[in-house]
Image (cartoon, rainbow, N blue to C red; front, side, top):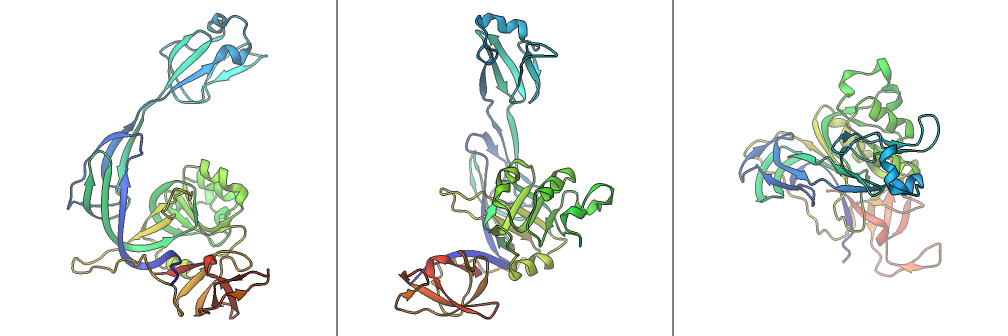
Length: 358
């Protein structure tokens, strides 16, 4: 038996999600077990303690006498400063300028150093989905049970957000610009069928779009995507991949719904996938089926191929040969025979498959 990776794309299912304050936050949980919550319900409040940052000013200006830094300082001890604000300079016309790397308070100027205390970060942790609190972890967060649509992706920029799901204009994200913007896109989560470009990331910021769901983007844009405030989730990966039909069809049917993006940035320590949760109304007597997270690979299952030359394509398992299969590269490995949506049948190493759908 083989237990493949799973990527869920489901119109309605039972969803359990933990919502926690950051590890370094000090706070309290306001939600109670049994409480009904909406997307914007604050379930916990916390504060990330202020950091102290030491800036070697004398070293920056190459001063022989560290005490001379006080003569170059343009701020005073105890003064509030913004990120990028000038702390000291040699000359208004010439010379170097030292700026603050953070927003905070000048705690000390002395011995050739600036010591800044960063402004504490206040956090209101929202539920992020509509459901019921079924467990509370004091000081940390809560476990919420909900029902809704679920679409898992392959990459996220580390942001999370909520908003109404909208489909991009016919001209793509680039058409959402300047005076032509429809007010419906502000604060929305926008679906684009095209690979995301650098211009699309700029438009997200310029037009206050909360999030974008795209099939793919150039890998060189990862750092730029991580720096913007909006959430970005890719359904397929990097390059010029098109969105799979199952995900695209489900997203288009859900346009106008309140939606949550948790664009988890995958890494070797993170087991969660980036995902979109679409909140759906469910009657009190309804209880959608929970996901089966331990399915074995069998003939007839829908799968997605995760490696080239067929990366991003989907199909159906038609056979699971017991004997290893010889690949074009000369290796013999356990494979599945998959009939792609194009009609072609190919042998695919089991490690290059993920279950697709429920």
